[in-house]
Structures are given as structure tokens and as C-alpha cells.
Length: 147
Image 1: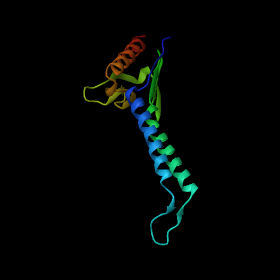
Image 2: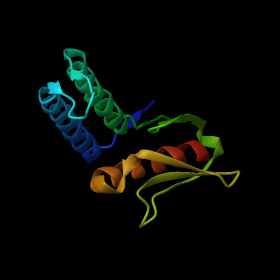
Image 3: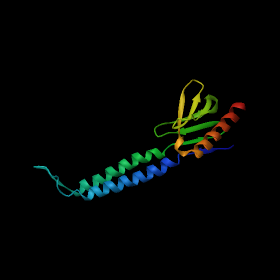
Image 4: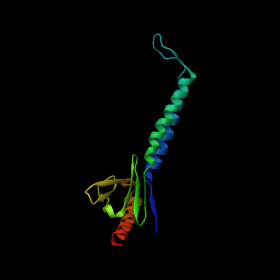
């Protein structure tokens, strides 16, 4: 039984670089936090404030890295989709078609009950890789429907 797995390509590079940049930026800002806060009767910046600033940068970076989460895994019986938020595990029998419209940012599954499920792992920005993934999913869908 053939299993295929696809993850977005370009967004992983962009999100990784952006997350690293945010951590570096917040770390640099934290080194500037010393002395008075600059207002009348205000407190002083302490080591904890610097640590909190770095921690905030790490949390924001983790939020950015969530965009690396999408994945689609399919075999002859099921398709499992994990998007940025949420996921689906569907048998091929409920899928009417695998679509990737010309102006769509990512692929979609059209279900028999007229719902659509986005497949964030196959993004238009990945061009050939996304087309290859859609073709593989369509082949698995065709095989499952004809069986």
C-alpha cells in the first residue's frame, strides 16, 4: 500500500528565517532595557524584564513556526490532513474531488456533502511540488473510488 506525505516547502523557509529574526530582534531589544523606564516616578528595568523580553520573542517565534505545521498523508483508504489549526482524517469514500483551482492559495477536497476541506500542505507558492502532490492525491482518490 503506497503512502504519500506532503508538507509545504517555501513557507517553511520563510517561517524559519522570520522566527529566527524575531528571536534575534527581541534579544537585541532586551539588552537595551536597563536603567530607568523614562517616565516620572517609574521603576527601573531589571534582569527579569530582559529575560521576559527574550521569552516573548521565543513565544512569537513559536507562533510563526506554527505555519510549518501543515501536512497531508494519504494512502489507498484514507487521507489525513493537518492544517495550521485543526485537522481531518477522511476516508476516500466521502471525497468527491481533489481540486486546485487556478487562483486558489492551496488545494482543496470537495466532499460529497458539498463541503470543502482546505489542504494547506499543498500551496500555490510551491508550484511544481504542489502540482505533483495534487496529482498523487488524485491518483489515490481515483484508485479508491474505482475499487
